[in-house]
Amino acid sequence: MGETVVEESEELATPGDVLGRAAEVKPGRGAYLASHNNLVYASLTGRVRTVAPPPGSPDKRPTVEVIGHKAHGAVPEPGSVVIARVTKVLSRMASADILCVGPKSVREKFTGIIRQQDVRATEIDKVDMHSSFLPGDIVRAIVLSLGDARAYYLSTAKNELGVVSAESTAGMAMEQHGTGYCNSCPVSQGKSTSNRDKKPSSVPLPMEYTVAPSIKTMPMIVSLKTCKD
Amino acid sequence: MEYVSPEGLRIDGRRPMEMRKLQAEIGVVAKADGSAVFEMGNTKVIAAVYGPREVQNRSQQLSDQALVRCEYSMANFSTGDRMRKPKGDRRSTEISLVIRQTMEACILTQLMPRSQIDIYVQVLQADGGTRSACINAATLALADAGIPMRDFVTSCSAGYLNSTPLLDLNYVEDSAGGPDVTVGILPKLDKVTLLQMDAKLPLDIFENVMQLAVEGCKAIADYIREVLSENTKQLEYRRGL
Image (cartoon, rainbow over the protein chains, first blue to last red):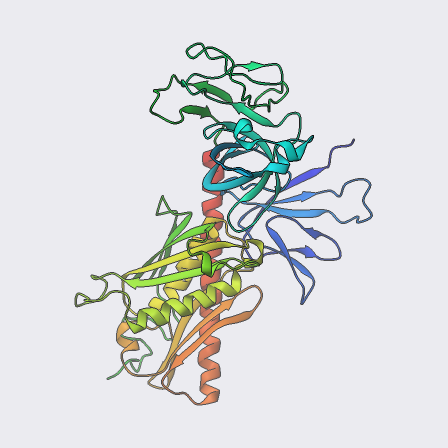
């Protein structure tokens, strides 16, 4: 597939600068269309960038964008893969704090909910939430939608999603066996019947995980080294 | 009292159509998303913008656009005599409302639903035209924060003393009791977002005075554009582009 041609000009635009006519260019990020005179204006301060239209599209107008210099924190969008830490497990859903969106960590707190029917793809009515998640687990999930006022809706119903890292009741990192986590922790030994049966297939993780040895009284100590933007 | 001498000079030596010296600086408050200091002569104002961020009061959340909040306050030491109640009095509440409505008209709020943008402006030195200086500082701070806007909002005041339209009144001229017209415009789009006047003026003279203020606004807009371009070039230079 051909690469879209991107052209960055030497022009600096400030809010209110005219970038073109609506008939010739399409407004992208950092630009907007004023409907009363059909002109495209800049809405941010930065360099002007023109992106050629994708080769198969009916609209032949290039997109004009203004690249600002302020980096805003990551915000979860429907369809994006997020890393979250489970905070609460109830009978029909689990609540999680979203830590990263893709490779970027978030600057503000976002809450997500994993409902019983979104935990896995098969036998969704037979899911036991307490054997799938424990507070403190790190999960990789996909954002289904913006959800309600309180939380995003997340789903782990795919092969590469699910619990990525967990601690056993003795506080040691659990090892993955087969299709689920078994409580094969060197300290407590023995398999517990409640397996966290969500294990992502081997997909290279975007971040490094380090599990610090925990004290039994502390609920959760897993530090993530993430690429902060 | 004579505010315009027979030679045509004002009390501070300016000509009637001359504005005070402008000076602006961006990025002065490190913690804020955007900030600016704006000076018009002796009037000095600092603005800090936080946002877009999550709405703190859920009941005020708007589902289709961003909530813009503004707070105007004067520092205790900003006027000649130390102020006792810098904010919460009627004048501050009114100016906060005015600045909020003016800035809300230019921010593209539909791009950031369910979020909140906070604008805090504080007057450090008051010498007339604080309302205008606050609006100009808020514009710079919003542009620094990278919040999408339709255009800048620039504001300037003008008055009419000794039968002469005067641009950019200072405190002494403002307290003279003559009319004081404050105009806020979107310079490139040529639209008025703020128009206030106290005292009375006949209509034809009002048109002249308002036109003078609008030209002052356009001059401020050129200056603001220059400051922002310079700032962007500095940032790119520091990033090694």
